[in-house]
Image 1 (tube, rainbow, N blue to C red):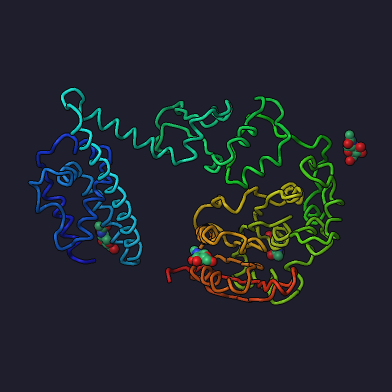
Image 2 (image 1 turned 135 degrees about the vertical axis):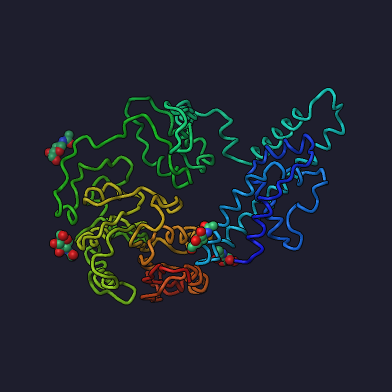
Length: 483
Ligand SMILES: *[C@@H]1O[C@H](CO)[C@@H](O)[C@H](O)[C@H]1NC(C)=O
Ligand SMILES: *[C@@H]1O[C@H](CO)[C@@H](O)[C@H](O)[C@H]1NC(C)=O
Ligand SMILES: *[C@@H]1O[C@H](CO)[C@@H](O)[C@H](O)[C@H]1NC(C)=O
Ligand SMILES: *[C@@H]1O[C@H](CO)[C@@H](O)[C@H](O)[C@H]1NC(C)=O
């Protein structure tokens, strides 16, 4: 740690500035919030170490002086916090730098906003007879006007202002907690969550929220999936009863359930063209290109995946598990896992896998559940519902590929990294792209800094060699230390 940093703390603690300040500056300060002001002051120091802090120019009755005065306490708190952070960072200086960069951006944004605000106040006070309208009133007006301008560019805010269905209003209303402020939650209010993408599907969402409370929900499974595929994820909750199959039976008992096609009567078929598993399986004979047409056939290809040698791109579960000490791969996620056969195979090795899947043209979620495995109805766009550094394994076959916008994919890869524990495995199974894109995707994957246990690139020929497609299959391990 450099001595300048320690000095600066003493300086902040020892010389709180108390210059006379004018009214509107104080007001702006209180609007911006003391913490942010501390950042402002701090960033000036950080980025201009030659002339540290506002110390040298206390006589300036400008915004900067005022902000320093008001926030002397929070500055020292912030510095204490930073000091702790820097202490830790002897082990890892990088976290401090990224924190600084984040702070700098925040400060930059605030500066810009403050400039706009000050300019507009000046403009208004010039025009106005300042005796008839107080500065406070003017500032309020300006702020409201600015907020409105921001809302005009925000589909969510526009949507929230229109007519919204009564049940949606009920669901999204802010509610005070009955027992008051809850220190553990850090809040006195309950806020229901709903995906911001709902703003793009106003009409469909209105249709979805049109129902009678306490009665059976409308028959609208396709509408639900359409909504989440358009970013309305999570969907709002409803107060109606989901439809259910009317003649269902108890599931097949464990462990036979894993490899037994469930009874048709346990599925609500309304949403699908097919009304039976036999119908779904017959689709595999159709000469159309679609993934997973044969996934419901548990005696076909599904039975052989990950357990029978099929080529260099297909890794065997037994070999993958051998990479790590016995029994240390225990929990994981399969992204876009079709009918759950990966989870079934892993389960045979005492590994619990949650399978995220949609119900595209078939009851994938219900099927997985009927097998006695855990389905998760989730698109690839939603943040993974797991905490940081928790899972032993993330697997994904045929899903992470070039159909995903590459920035979206980058966010997703970082999210996978987030949920994997150090030493956890990321099994990239048949990632596909065209040959010219290989560099892009390889560098994107390499950015994670994972150890490559296995890495195979092969030709993808199912659509024909003229497409020049490639597969990547890789077995990667999240490092324990920053690299
Ligand atoms: C920094 O860490 C050392 C030990 O590693 C400890 O003695 C010291 O109190 C720490 N300083 C702060 C400000 O936490
Ligand atoms: C309910 O299921 C049983 C056994 O699967 C079947 O025999 C019966 O016909 C079904 N009834 C209806 C109304 O679908
Ligand atoms: C799974 O766990 C059971 C019970 O602990 C054990 O008997 C069995 O050998 C394990 N199977 C594998 C493949 O590790
Ligand atoms: C996404 O792809 C485009 C062109 O294919 C490329 O210019 C861009 O840098 C890529 N973005 C990322 C995050 O890799």
